[in-house]
Amino acid sequence: MISRLLRFKQHVGAHRYYVGQIGLDLVYTLFSWTFIPGIVALVELFYIMKRVDHHNEQMAQELAVKVKALLR
Image (cartoon, rainbow, N blue to C red):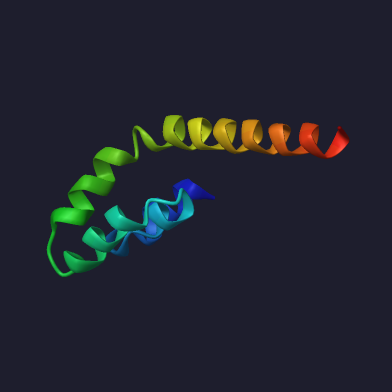
């Protein structure tokens, strides 16, 4: 999912919304009329999977804490 967003919506930063980085996404949107977000997104394509894995792991840990709190 995230790699599709990165490929097709890179110029507006849709992939940043997905991982919750709204501030950086606004920068992408402001510069969407230039070539800068496209170049940065191309570089990010090689690093995005690691970031998504880290984000998913963090969300899973938060969920585990909430589940444990409910079970007590």
